[in-house]
Length: 288
Image (cartoon, rainbow, N blue to C red; front, side, top):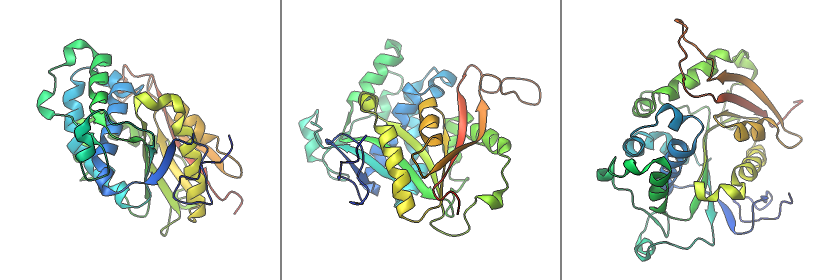
């Protein structure tokens, strides 16, 4: 795909996204929108979370809006998180144009509705909640400099909302046989950690994830980073990050097959999920 879309933070690094989309750095006012995209995409359309937690998804989503805020804010505050905005987006409600914060748009989720509509089925409930996401942010790529790690105590509420979340990362870390000295950052602007790739369900047909991922690899290299690490819970995400454009090199450094992973007692700990999760490292300066 030709890199012709100059609606990006760095003019020297245009994207391959269709012309109606702009990549912009996320700011704190975008945090609720980014959180909503993450939660809706993961809880209703992921190959993992709705399989592990098929009931009370709306209640879990509302619980997640507070528990995921630290993860989202930490990455936005890093200045290294970006969003894809639909510049042709038409607001669904006239009152959405009157809001401030991250621009024209609004989120209309009401926590008091949790569980009220779930009897109509997951797909219909997902559509209902998606219709209440009336803003032009349509995809997010959250990142942070790994020398400023997440505070795991502050991650506690999210771990409680998605109990298998921390377990998944633990399993990937256990399977990672690399010498930490061979890749870990020792100073700022060395290794970027990606944590949260999500696109609104109604925009998946535009292939925003792949184009934005490749744009971010180039952008991180321009900023001086030597590597990017990302944990993937979707085959397409793993494929894009493990097969980057030249001169970058992608490596799957560890994997967890959820269909067969067992604990010390032989119990399948991710049953009934069958997704293979991966940790991928992208070398932005191979050979150096």
